Length: 286
Image 1 (cartoon, one colour):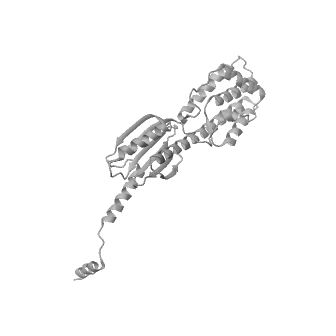
Image 2 (spheres, helix red, strand yellow):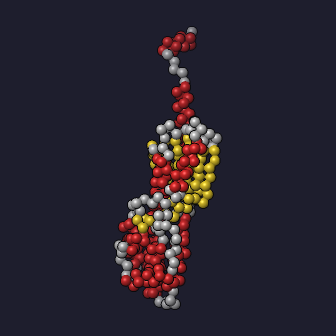
Image 3 (cartoon, rainbow, N blue to C red):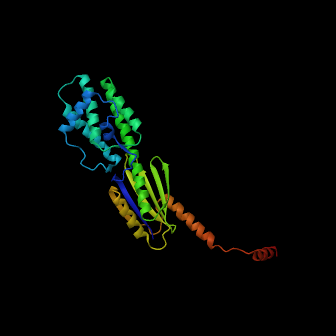
């Protein structure tokens, strides 16, 4: 028997990597060029609006949750709407609403310089058309960075869970941009395979399966593994566990199972001695 576990549409994880910087913190440290009038307007917006996220800064939200950024941006624009329709003021409103939104969200990035460049280009845009274009580029860059941090954080959490339950020998591989595979092995030679999948809509799933269990410990192992994932704050829209009856489900697990079966059959084959080989040849010749 064996088991598989699935975390469908992962919502969050709390084990944020230390290298991932907060966009809000970067902006608060004034590491980009923000005009004084826009900085003043940002303070007004922050004073008039409640923080959009009541969750801890330690909680990293999934890429699918980033769609709320546009909703919060529109809300900030509404706060700044003073019935002034002059093109110059429209640009200021967009820049102000953008910075206020970025400071109100827990967005994490890896490439700080790339994000700072995108924000600076937004701040220095001179026309309304250019401002809208740079806004789109900046938000896209930040969402892309946040997604990379989320995937890497999730991968780190899975590896940490493996190590905690004794699966310390690990190999992590980025198979495709949308698939990371982690193969962990314990001292008994049992494999715990986890695959992190991301689809075109940024929906992320974690699929895990045991391979090589012969002592009936599959349920106990998977219980411990899932408990560690919970401890690391991994939450999903849907979680499911089921027995596989020893039949591999993931393609990579099928490959491991096939190789294990082949080796077992090879080891069990009889070795023909030289004397018996001569007798067989003589028999055939006669």
